[in-house]
Image (tube, rainbow, N blue to C red):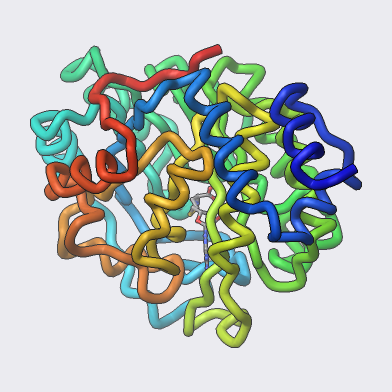
Length: 345
Ligand code: SAH
């Protein structure tokens, strides 16, 4: 079967075999067609709407030592910070004024943030902004903790699975972290009732196209409400400093295939995509993404939340420049909407 037919079939059935996905990933000759189909599928579910999320990176302390990540525990060069509660609320205030109705609270795995502390913060935000969604991205916690945070009012949780191949997972993480635990966390989050986000890096060290196929099949099977996909970008103070970055093409192909498999998914055009290419996020939108997550963290802290080198952290990707962002989104053929932007299930 030719590649266009393959793409048509996946776009229609939202299902694919490993072989079909591999064929498309390995062959870029019909990329334009793939992106176009992904755009069609996203427009059936979401029209030309792009949802915005205000990202608050509130702590870069981390007890984990993921080999790819710039804020890993063993990176002694990382200057650590925590926002005060007042600073967090001030980010929400600024964000709300700018039109954000979702706040994404992201951090390293920082034991300072006990359940009680987090529940207090979540309750305060939800009380002040009852019309807003709170998304958490705090890494692995236990079921009881996830449940408490949900009961405190958190609506969504982002936890990328990072890779759906166990052997590959072990190459990206230290021995004390486990693939099974990551996957169990995702199942628990979904069971509790969070709108749940999985996701993976494209072009991470040792990754093959076969690994990406497994990621896509996992997404197709698990059906998360959200999927974060970005290129791996090396960080100079990590064991992976000498590895190549993921490519724009492979990331866009992974985004587009995800859209075909998960027509209603909330898929961000990620900051990492905007970092490897100046047009990365626009191209992401045109390949099926429908969410952008500008940074709401106080400017002075942004450069410290350094997951990878050269992360865009000033200028137009920041929440303050939302007008400029809106213009860029509209020049790509879409429109930013300022509501909670819930999943269309
Ligand atoms: N502690 C939270 C948040 C992690 S940071 C958690 O564990 O979920 C958010 C995401 O950034 C990670 O899931 C990872 O996929 C991505 N990331 C980390 N280092 C990266 C790198 N070097 N290049 C690209 N993405 C990276």
